[in-house]
Image (cartoon, rainbow, N blue to C red; front, top):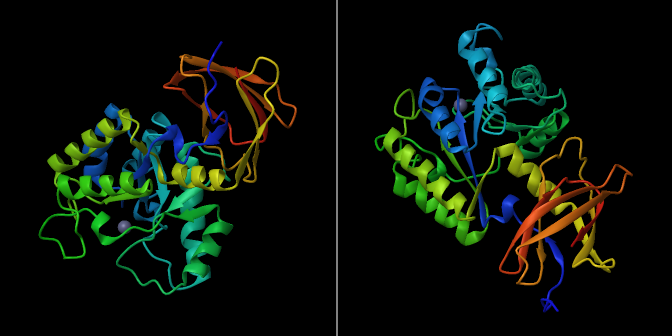
Length: 324
Ligand SMILES: [Zn+2]
């Protein structure tokens, strides 16, 4: 007979994939170097970047310099993710101004990306332009447009050349790797911000950028990092914080069972939640049965179990879950 573990329950993992920490890669202003050099490297490694674009900088949606980003986002969903950077890199002096600066831009970004009109977007506040709105005023305008400010980070997370002004503190692979270390130590979420890479403006060295992508890839493979789009990590954190997982008596033959309730709207907050279940150590896989509370057909999947721990993803909606 199996020896049952002491904690025979199911938990929501802090980050998707039960990674120790999360990291997001931000690329502002849609630079040519990001397009030419960063995107192929991300695609090759299946790492995700969020590219913050100002559509008003182009001649129109058919301008090849803009349309190419939409083509990439559709071809590589979840790898190339477009973010809100306002229509013309401004709009921060009034609520009406910001609403105008993001409404058109956001609509075009969603359309270009092949996303539904209400899809949530990450907002990267443009730098170097007047910004007098309070955080509260800014957040209210963003929320009304289905957008969320990308989370705060310090100047040390901002990449650039060594001779750029002193606020830009991330110049090397070692600088960026130290931020990854901090994320893992805290179990938190860090961002690395870039503009140009190996060219264009505020250029971070291309070779150092390659090294940090390889490092993120390595740490991801070891389960240490989740490299998620800004909006994906935002959604996951919101879902996780609004979710409850109540352990219930396991039905006949099941190892564990729980009832998941989620207060976020699954139509908008749609990032899969990662659950962890304690299972007997001699099991190397489990069957996970999910019965949605809305009466949708139940589903079943098989998940690996390693050292008495099974990890699997479920949709972020109310359901009964049984592990067998
Ligand atoms: Zn910018």
